[in-house]
Length: 228
Image (cartoon, rainbow, N blue to C red; front, side):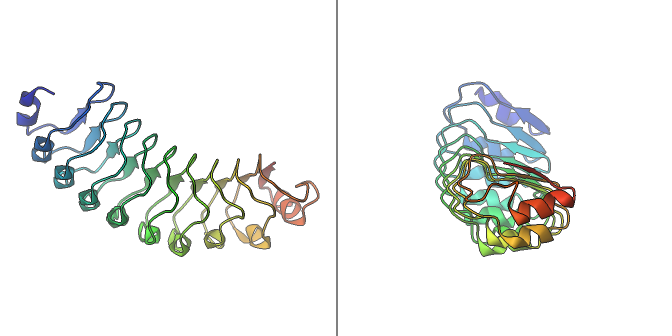
């Protein structure tokens, strides 16, 4: 990156996508007026902690399609951000500090190597969309039950053997994508999700054909589309 970019303190949107960047200067922390930063589709292996100084970010932070193995804990200071995309990296975990992003509405972390989510994921009280396709999750934290604004949850292609119990009672959950897991049965509480409109169960290990499963039948009678 030309050093002159970091002198543009008035910048509000900075798009550096598709540039084969292998590193990011710590000087990025001086762009305090930024509301959106796009670093997607590069070759970054790490991020400077100075990203946490961009507390004016209110729109989007795109970090997808890089080679990141960890995220700096300083990202938790970006409490006004509404969308974070860290998909298509090599992350084994998300830092606990991410749960301090109080304004976060959408979190995308598809195609990583996540085996667990932060225990305090439920602190993201405004979260509406959570995209987790292609990880190694076997369960969800108990605090997931506090995601009362969650509308869309994508858990496709993970290692789940059952529908995560912390989802029971989520009042606004509309779409639940469980394709490509190892789920063998449907829990009765699924019928009590008041807003559920679509449940995708393809490519699982269901022991009962969904056409005969009383839970699936009850959901379909209520108007929920069950795909299996």
